[in-house]
Image (cartoon, rainbow, N blue to C red; front, side, top):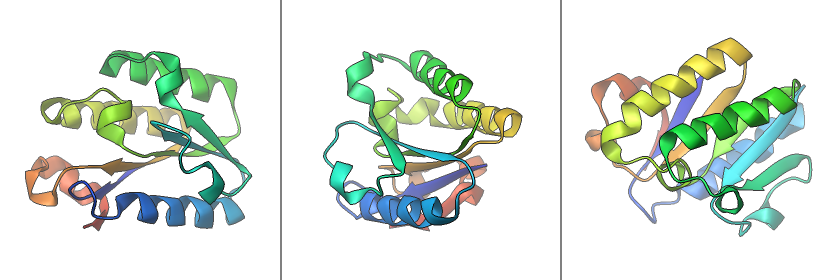
Length: 139
């Protein structure tokens, strides 16, 4: 399952994402991973959550990002949830590729039973229609 937290920059998406991940980890049966463009939010995350600073891994395009995600999943068979802050930046995705990238993540989610929650700096009305059903928070 892929879920989206959407809204323009500065609207509070990260706060919602952090609240969600810290709530989910309390009852999670498997592992939880939080991907971000820095370690800025390290102390706001429960210590059971693995924080990955994606900028350390030299990802330059969408395909490299998808490969990176698959690599994480392949190394952790207990992985249950992944949270992506600043999704467009960490995934090197522009708005025209967003739908196909999220479709790919949905396929990965179905195959490996990992849930994804993405924070995206796009207003809800700017998203393609096929993604609007995935929105859990719109700011």
